[in-house]
Length: 245
Ligand SMILES: [Zn+2]
Image (cartoon, rainbow, N blue to C red; front, side, top):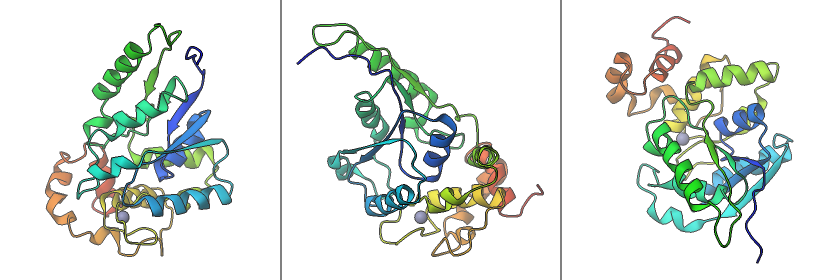
C-alpha cells in the first residue's frame, strides 16, 4: 500500500432529503456521500434516492457506503448518538472539504459549530504526516448554519427559477412504516413549514396533515416564545397562520 494522499475533493453528506437536494444544488460538491446505516427509515430513503436519480435530480457523483451497524443504536426518536461523527470519519476517505446540512433550528449537538470545529481538529490531527500518510488538511463546513429551512428553500427556488419539483420527490421522514411522508414526525413537519412558507403546494404529499401533529400543542408555548428552535420558530408560526408574511 502506498501513502494516503489528499483527494482534493469536496464531499456533501447526503440523505436524499430536502436539505440535501438544496445544498447539492447550491454548493455543487464533487461527491454526494450517502451512508446506508441501518436506520429504520432506510428503505423509504433509498426509494426516494432512486426516484431522484431516475428523474435526473442527482447530477454528480453519488457514493453509497454500507455501514449498517449504526442502526443498532437508533433510539425511539430516531436519533443515533454520534451519527455525524461516524459520517465525517467515512467522508474523510473521499475528500478534504466536507459539507454537512446543518441549519439554524437544528438542536442536536452533532450539528453544532463547536462539534464541527472539534471534528475538523480531530481529522487534521489524525491525518498529519506520518508513516502511512503524506498529510491531509480538512475543512468541515456548514455554510447554511445561519439560515432556516424556509430561507434555504427560498434561495433554492431563486437558483432554479422557481422549480421545486425535486423537493417534492425528496423524503425526510422518521416513520419507518409509511410509503412516503407520515406528516407527523418532526422532519415531516419542518419540511412542510419550509414548503408552505415558499408557496409550494403539498396536497397529497402527507398521510396526515402536519399542522395536526399530536405533539405540536405541547411545544407551541415554546415556539411562540421563540425558545424552541430559535429563528425557525417564527417560520413555524408563519406556516401555521399565526403571523402575517
Ligand atoms: Zn414523517
